[in-house]
Length: 284
Image 1 (cartoon, one colour):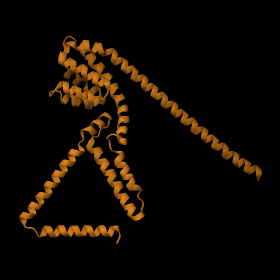
Image 2 (cartoon, rainbow, N blue to C red):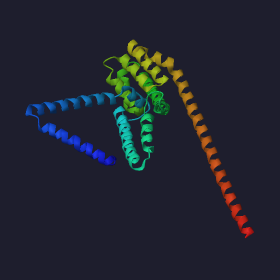
Image 3 (cartoon, helix red, strand yellow):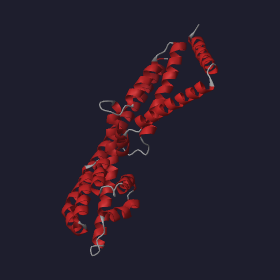
Image 4 (cartoon, rainbow, N blue to C red):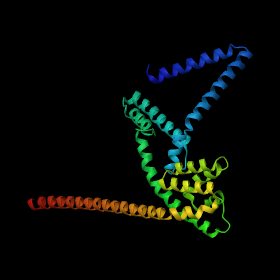
């Protein structure tokens, strides 16, 4: 008997035993059995949901700029690994090829996001790109809030009102600002600290600290705080622009060199083929 036959025998035997056991029970025992199965299923489902809702993974996904969250990532990981594993086992049974089984193990390990597994460094790379976009929005938010403070200097507004008004103008920070405003009533300082940590850039942490100082000291000191940090924000913005310009120049140079290398390789191949045919025609 092959693997499929053994599997069919095992499945049929287990099914027959379950049906026989269930048919020989009384109504009370059947109800108790169903209740036990339902309870075990609910407990397993609850534990699975707790494991899938990983706050550390959610934080990594948010900082990397992805729109989906930890459950989706975990489901994709489980389904991809399970699919490759099933196909790999079938291929191993019928073709004696273990490549897909090995690939399933590679996918499971490769999608592990904790250090020192590969996906941890992948998230780090995604976070750097997302941090540049968030910093541009953060500089814009800084300017908008500063202009709002200047415009309403005689009638100063609170930090919550200032941030709520600018929410639609900074889409890259909308998720972070929404969470900040949602937790504002619980503890403004804690909500601002969490905002700086979630955005994950030094500029965001500085901006959050500025707003926390304004919230504690009152709107009257907002002008002094913004004037004190204005030069630092402008310097950071210029340095970020220079870094982006340098990276683009390096990328352009690398692509140009690769293009020249490919062209030169193709020209050499054409010359060799042409010379070969020319020599063959001259000898014939």
